[in-house]
Image (cartoon, each protein chain N blue to C red):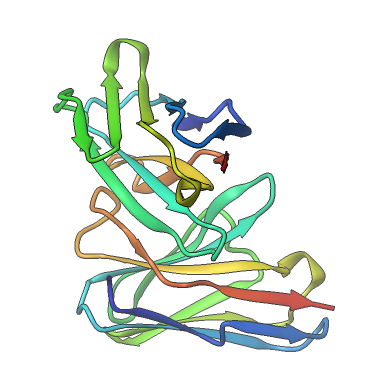
Length: 113
Length: 114
């Protein structure tokens, strides 16, 4: 199993509060990704990183920011959480870019009330 | 534009039946990659297979087999002699270096009844 952990695994928060989700890998892979999974939408890419301090937007990046100060950690921040951001968030890693296999973390279930 | 279609939303079979999950993709790229992932009820996403567009050889891994046909833009997944533990949501996905994105299908929920 790929060494990927996500924290927290579950979180309930209120609208308007900031939330940070953490993804940690022990594989030293260059690429890291954040996805959200919603019924009827499958998995959609929020942001990704191709190296330390190198990040870019995915298809549903509005309302989210990311940071990567170390190879092993990729943080996803919701500056002011909204109910539409209630979802399951998955982190993934890959050694190469998109054409390489992505391995996923266990997921974080976020509920915004 | 790239697109992955898994037309079967839900499939229900009885244990030991064979079942095929369909995946049809759209891309204009000549080099692309296809993937299957499994998401069991516990929620994690498990990688099953990666196939590049130049390798149309079918693959078999135990009870699992994959049929890649470029002529019909399909990458179907067959489970032989299904088991209850195969119950999960299965996702087909497509990527290419030109688009720089992994596109997932909507997923097919497979229920295997004892």
